[in-house]
Length: 74
Image (cartoon, rainbow, N blue to C red):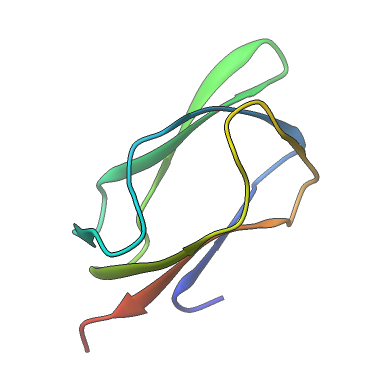
């Protein structure tokens, strides 16, 4: 979804590297997830402002779960 980032696979949130209100750039790492015993870095798909963070560190998420909403600068 444009401006919304989803989990590519089921996993656990290990780190949140942003806060609501932060300005982020396309490609910036925002979340570190663990899935299939590997760490996956979830990067911003657009530049903009973090509008919402839907999960906390330690939470399990399903594939396709919305992780973060970004208000695009466009």
